[in-house]
Image 1 (cartoon, rainbow, N blue to C red):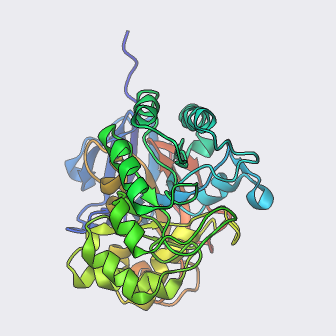
Image 2 (tube, helix red, strand yellow):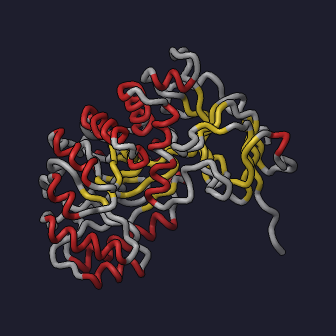
Length: 391
């Protein structure tokens, strides 16, 4: 016997952010999902909203795809010894983040650097985040840091075992452009996406990765182009944006002025779809549960771009570049949403204007795969209006 579909209806949406740069705001007030996938988008009168298992009245708040943090460093479950952080992923959920991408589980004490050990750790990391989602957050992990001596067969072995990511190239012993290029190509051959460390050293053992190494390695993502923490000189950042077509990742734990430079250069090139956002946490700067929202507000206000465009950097741009089934309000995509509103007493004529002035919105609810995962955020400023679970 087939179980009845689990149906979610969210109605009375005041603003619908799509996550897509080509049309960042959608016309509609209702979203319907079935079995965790978006089944209908539009106006309530035109959709099948009958007999929902879960009914949410948005009460005029805005709906956005759940935010994606493109650059995190998890270790195991919802714990990392870096800054002794426990429940940091849950805290980020309260900042609107519903999906995270590991750039390497580098903070594990005694992290193995021999080839057998690093492969085993990558496979184990991939498995435990596949099997366990902290507070419902989707953590794509198992991102090995490549080391000298690795061969093509090692990448084939990892891919066959389910590994889909490389940790930041440059955090291990492979720092030369020619060796990195070879291993990045092997990874790509077997469907493993790569990110390269960009800028000065971040932790003991890492080193300077300048534009020449980044360009020669040709990784899929220019990791923290604004430095993690130390940025490259301006001319090198501009050169990287101009000289390749790879992802331009801007992170919270980096140089904010350099982030603005990279974003503006992407716009000048007509390539804003390359811009994605991360926090690069947990790190020496700690964990920022509101880091992605802060990046959206910073880029919109200081970069003078519409807030709805900045939201795309943290949703649809990342989803498309990373090959994810979330991040966009489209039929068939994962029903991962946040419901947000202007923070209480914040300036601005509406939520988008308030964010454009540099203010954070208040998160009223998060939904992952069609299930409510949190209500009023304990971390954002309180929202003016709150959604309500009616059923």
